[in-house]
Amino acid sequence: MTPELTLPDVEQLVNHLRENRGAVAWTERRHIPAALVRVLQAIPPAVNAGAAAELLNLLASDPKWEVRKAVADALRHAQDDRFTKTLVQLSGDENTFVRRAADGALERRRSAPASANGGLRVVSSFAGKLAQLEQKHGTEAARLARQIGETYYDQLVGATAPDARGILTPLASRLDRMIDQLARMPVQPGRLRRSLQQMRERVDLLAHMVDDMRSFALPVPPTRRPERLAEILAEAERLAQEAVDGRGNEPSNIRVVQAVDGAITVEVARDRVLMAFVNVIKNAFESFPQDATANARSIRITAGAADGVAKIRIQDNGTGMPKEDLAQILEFLPGGKTKKNEGTGFGLPIARRSIVAHGGTLTIESEEGLGTTVTVTLPLEHGGSEA
Image 1 (cartoon, rainbow, N blue to C red):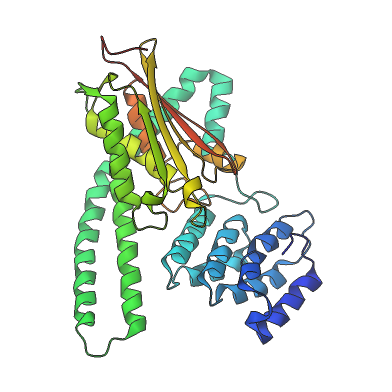
Image 2: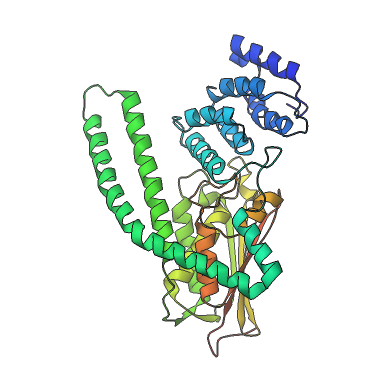
């Protein structure tokens, strides 16, 4: 399926798929949503949104989950309100990957206003205002403004997150009991069971989000202790593998190489720096398409020291990010997501905040189709090893 779809093409596809779903192979059907959205974003659009919505609605009920997920992924880029109903339908899909993709698309539509041609925003209004402030009043004024905003955020989360967790915990427990009771019934209503399981998954997602909000808001403890960097990175890799295990990309199919000077010592609050690296390495594990060749997937973690600083690089050869997604990620705003991000959007902001609090830096380079490199610097312990 090529991106040069026209209105007759769309109408013909609708008729074919209505009469016989198998008239187009599913491996071709899954490319239709992205092609549709591309032509909708053209100026002027090559097809009208009404015809596109009709075709996407058909594909949203496709028997192949890969096709349904392709619809949800594509609709992250389409801001027309006529597509919202399709995403809501997909958010209740029986397949976990489809639901996550639809939930992510719905969240993006809520948080990212459309540009004039319906495309993704590249820079948020918050980041834009900071840039204007920096241009007019200097870097220090912009830094203080961001710091004030983060302080208010911390206070708000500190006041509300415990109450939210207090609501979610008993709700999750009651849902678990209902699922258990349903499992013991001689005849199980499948639709009801799926609905309860979907509700439970959403409660888990909300709980995870609340926990991430609290983690972002918590100040980094002032106490620092000397820690071996190699030990922190080895543990971070293990924890990241546990976090992604069973979620599509099996860690055992990804080759991880660590080349870290065992003598490097940093003075840190261990738990916070450890979790920062867990978040970064977890993203690297999740960067690979599920159909990638196993022996082609690799993550390389290196670390050296010079000029009083430890420099750590986490490199993957995954899918990488397009420029607009990278620009959004580099804002490091909590809750921000890209089209491939199925998490809460707090991982990298939490990581960067922890690293910066230690006097370090976190930067990201990425190229679509080639992979991503995250570079972290941390001050060495006084007297720590240098190359």
